[in-house]
Every structure is written in structure tokens, then in C-alpha cells.
Image (cartoon, rainbow, N blue to C red; front, side, top):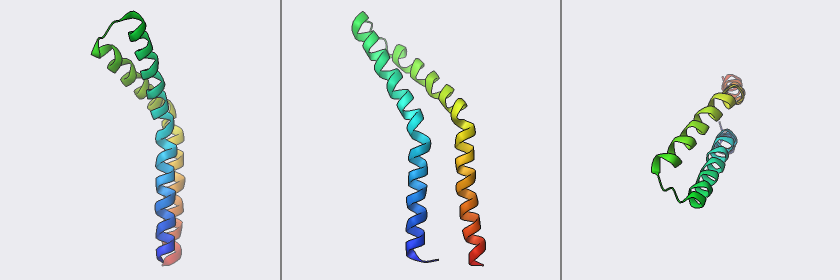
Length: 88
């Protein structure tokens, strides 16, 4: 395996990681901003008020996006396995 192929694999792995984590991070960011706005408007500064909704939103988004994440990871692993098989 050449250095260029290894760099391509690493680039694809990083891009896959970004694609898998971006929706969850954006949902957490959106919920965090909404909660911060509500806290600023009501002047309620409770730590759990910001932490618990974000945590729940992230867990729900992981649950909803898990099939797509698993399919993307499976396709990536199959690509790597095919490349390994072609080397042998």
C-alpha cells in the first residue's frame, strides 16, 4: 500500500467522522442557543436547565441518526476490506 492511498483513507475517515458528527453537534448547538435565549429572557440561571435538554436532544438525535451512521460506517469498512483483499 502506497503512502498516497493511506493519505486518501485518512482523508476519507476524517470526512466520514465530520459527516457523522455534524448533525448531532448542530442539534446540540441549536438546543443550547434556544435554552440560552430562554434563560436570558426569563433570567433563570439554572445549570441543569441548560444541560439536561441538550443531553436529551443529543441522545434522541443519536437514536434517530444511528441507522444512517451505521450504514455509512459499514460502507466505509467494506471499502477498506475490499482494498485489503485486493492487496493480497
